[in-house]
Length: 548
Image (cartoon, rainbow, N blue to C red; front, top):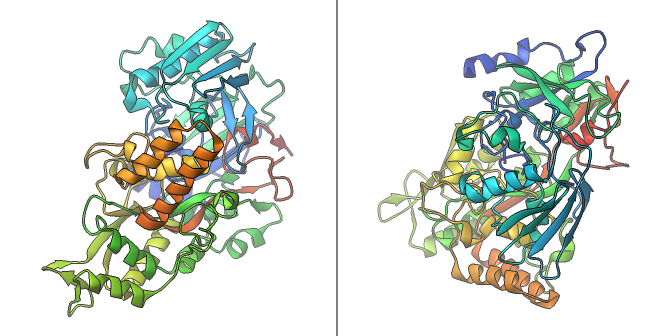
């Protein structure tokens, strides 16, 4: 899920400033249930603004506050904290053909849209055909061949090339009602301010300060949800969300908390966190413009950054292996002979590389070459305090090695447009952070097939640094043409070697799915000894919660 979240994140974050700034102090208490004892949990998220846009195919929507999947649902739920863990949802069964080019799905019977219409295969075919016909809406990056419905409760998707390894992307599309969206002339411009979904919650009220979803009384999972609703509130940054959690104004958040033991956990026995390693993060360099269009400069920057320092400010594990894959999750995927390729912190080594490239130290303490200073800007969302802190550490580290670094904080809703168009020199927070296979991570991180000229948006947020190495492209071609496990393993080994050698971007830490909550009003949360699902804000957990 795009940007900067779990999802990835999210996976992609889907969507005044003066108004939001005051919310931390003036937001109504989430501890007060609405209407005669109803259990309404308040969800807090850092965001500069919130729009009444619930079209799940647009990049800027109300879902950026964490409500993705609460109204519109996918065919299958994907557990991003446990590789290969899939939960049947709108689809109950699925099967691939031997070649991995055809996926047959059986749909759940008895599901209704919140306007009373039946959910059928026509809705699924429409939703997939929509993103096939409109590539700008296709956030999956998957190339579909045909989408057909043999009957009311089955669907068949076909692909021109083997695609079974991208099952998690294929089946996570939000399904919309054909009888509503099919009447819209321009879906790309459709706000969908009164959404009709199949999900456990329905839109009740909306203001710029917050919106509330109430439970769907006719939801297909009988007896669920047990809680009465969720209220989503934007705050100016993660610090404001954390403070609201402590004050009892927020019950659940997918947010980073600095010094979490002291600032949160120690304040109440009701407070809990569950942070799971799900991906990798670091300094994403624009490889089409100076200075990072030179591999050796990327290498020098990598040597000059103290990964442990960067990781510590975000309470994350520091990255160790040069192949980029997050450990220990992908430990078994490391090819024999590459285990010892580990990151080093060596400022003198960085300076040696730069001087070998013809850079000389200026009187201001920064390197220059042919009159051009070794300088760049890190563009990040100002509200994401852990990214701001990491950028400041990187800035300080690289200054010691002769780099001049500026930090540019922008609005949360602006960052995806900036990075997808390549209109940055460096950023932090890879939009695609979680995948179930090593090849899928590499595909998102550096497949040249996704690269576009600067100024043209990459809608899937893959390869935003615009790596265009032909050798890397060939390994991807080899993998997707492979017919045996040995051939696939050889291709992945080649990709690992290329990531180590080319350093398409600088992995600094292992990304975690952040989650914090209070048990004051509800129980049933994932715990460290029973992490049945990621605890970040999501419908699977919301459906397990029980009012106290």
